[in-house]
Structure formats: structure tokens, C-alpha cells
Length: 409
Image (cartoon, rainbow, N blue to C red):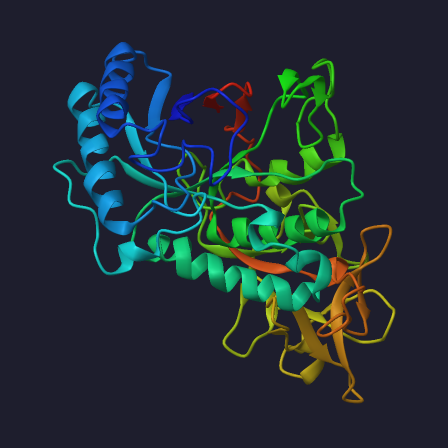
């Protein structure tokens, strides 16, 4: 499936606030020509079944951006696409490099069509400046998620589809802020069951910003496009390719999975005699999180217990004691914390063999050097069948560096 995206008007590497492509009326952004282009492209691909959507404009930005013109032109553009092609989804981007749709809280769009409107957002580590490098990961994650929900995420609560049409990171693995950001993003994407596109697929460019053969370290493919740049990362994000909650699933009753963002895996039990371990989320146990805050395997009396520091977490049947009650703590709301019988606060953790263990809670605040990722978990609503389902959609963004972009799904 393909989503067509009007990226920039004057071919160049995208983007800056002063490149003349940022907002309606800029030097290279004539609104009338833009609408003519949308109509022509929508007409060209009318009846082409694998073209499923059109994104009206990438990353609106710059000193001219304002809400009134956003409504004026984005609504006209949406109607132009719909008039020419009633089969495609119409995807609207926000302001400030596609990070801000907050104005829709007070004034929704007014369009002649329904059931085909999608909003999009972009989210990278650099979206929040240097916060991920200079702050405590729990506190930064909490602050960033609050910003995302205020600026774009609220649309989900209003019932609109929200498409994270760009996210990505340096795949060499040595960028601290990118690594921290990704673990936070993974938790949010799983919890909200977000649709997404990874940026980008490409491994290199013929020419980018004057450099021949520029190596794209964010790219899924390696430099010569014949292999995967980072198979560990690809496996990690693959858990998000299949929805946690329909459509297209052999659905079971609503339950929880205990998701570990740093690995893309979920807590499983092999038997009552073996410790809890991380494994494929499609084979996860169906958990319930009770009103008393115990984590119980649905259909059983077994719950997770914290018995001893630096030892594996256990399953037990006494689920009302303090060592069986789990609170989501820290600013990130991703630490599962309980108390030992002596009153010591502890958190779920994962060791080097992916065994779920009990450890002292770490990195809760202030410490900027500490990495809490091994202790981050999300309780994710799921209707995936415990028998497992195969991923059925993969999303990547292809960008040729010369102003054209498509989403390849």
C-alpha cells in the first residue's frame, strides 16, 4: 500500500524554517498551484487500488504559519483530493514540523466527507531539543509524552485516526538521546496501538546536501541497499507492526500483555516451575490488572510476586499481600513497583538472559546518566489471540532527497 505525500515545492533536502517551502504563501509555496497539484495527482491515481491515501503537505513550518490559514487551505486541499478521488484516505499534517494539532481541540475541521480523514504527526528525539541527552530519562519521557498528548495524542481520545508518519533514530546504536527516546516511544506506541511509518527505508543517497553517496544512518537498509542495517532494531520494532487490538486479528477477549519496550518482548511463563521470561508478544500470557493492583494470569489464580531482591519474580496464589500488588510509578509511568515482606520497595527488572527479576528501583529522578530501560514495562490492552498472529503491515518512508516522498506499507 502507498501513501502519496506532497513534500516540498522546490527540490532540495527537507527541511528548514527558512527554505521557502514551509507554509502557504512562502516563496516556493503557492496555494493555488498546490491545490491544482493535489487534484492532478489524486486524479492520476484514482482506481489504483494500492494507493490508499494522500498526505496533503509535509511539515508545515516557518514564520508565516498560522491557524487561520491552516484551516482555510488544508480544508480546501482536502476537498480537492476528495473531489478527484473518493477512494483515498485524506491525511492532514499539523504546524511546527508536524508536531502541533492542538488547535483542533477547540475547532474541528469542517469537511463534506466523513470516515476517511486521518491526522498525522512526526516524533523524533530532536523534536524535544536536547532533553533526552541532558535530562533524567523517566522525567524526560513523562514530560515528552504529556506534550505529545496535549499537541496531537488527544485526537485519539476524540475518535480520530492518528498516524505517526515519521519516527526514526540513528541505527549505529551509539546515540544516547536516540536510544532513550526510542524506548519511550515504543511504550507509548504499544499502549496507544499507534499506526506508524519508520523514516526512512533508504540506506544512502546519490546526492544529499552536496555529498555523493551520503550514508543514511537512520535507514533500514545498509549503504548499498542489499542488507538490513540493524537487524536487532528491526526485530524490536516489528512487534508494533501488528495491532494489539484489531482489525485483522483472530480476536480473543480483551486482556493485558506486559510489554517491555527496550526489547519489544512481553512477559511469558513456560511453566510454574520455570521463572518468568521475556518472549514474543504473540505468545504472551493474557494478564489482568485487578482493582487491587495485582497482575493475574486470566483464568487462573496465579499472580506475580516479589519474594526476594535480585532473584526471579515468582507466580503465587496469595494475591492480596503487599508483595503481590504492583503500582505504575515514576514520571514515565513505566516502573512496576511492589514491596518485599520487609517493606522494601522494589521493581520488576530483566537480566541479561531475559529472565524477569526483582531489583531495587533505579533512575526514578534527577540522575541524568542512569538508564532505566531494563525496568520499563507497559500494561498494554490487547485482543491478540494467545495462539499468535503474524504481522501483516510494515511501514517505511522512502525519501529521494529531491522533494518527493512516498510511504511504502
